[in-house]
Image (cartoon, rainbow, N blue to C red; front, side):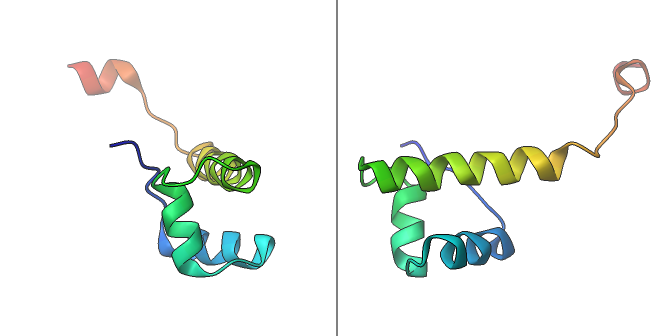
Length: 65
């Protein structure tokens, strides 16, 4: 089953942005619905996750040793 896992703070942000309920956002992130709204919510979650992970720096050489 496909689902997008997002921190609760980010879910709350999506709820406010789309003026949806938490349950609706949860179901959209679990790909229960395939509407344009659902796709927009999924895309926004992806954007927020990418923005959150940008500042993370890892040195691959150190990790592999």
